[in-house]
Amino acid sequence: MISHLTLLLLLQLAGEALARGAGLPVPGPILGLLLLLALFAARPALAERLRPTNAAILSYMSLLFVPAGVGIVGHLGLLADEAVPLLVTLVASTTLALLAAAVAFAAVARLTGPRDA
Image: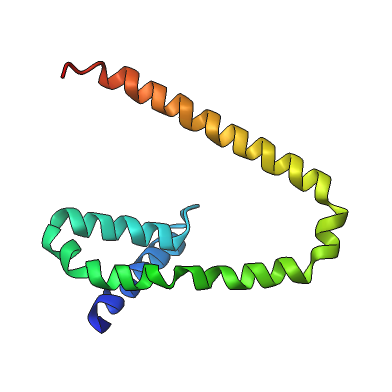
């Protein structure tokens, strides 16, 4: 597991170095994930070897939401003062995201065409 975690952290570091070195407007961890995806495409067996480590990491992912929950509770007064703009923003952004997903789905369905079963 240590070697797998090391590989994941090295890929994140490589992505960060690439983003900063090249001045790219993409976060380093995203580039690291793209590097990991390329590595998995080049060596599919590696994906299977990393599966248990990835499952272990994902099982503890909910702990990452604890600081956000504490921040929300700590700023309840501010959230109450800005409730209407926050609600409007949440509803609008959710609606736009759903519309974008529907348009993307329709475009892909049109491009791939109907399939006969």
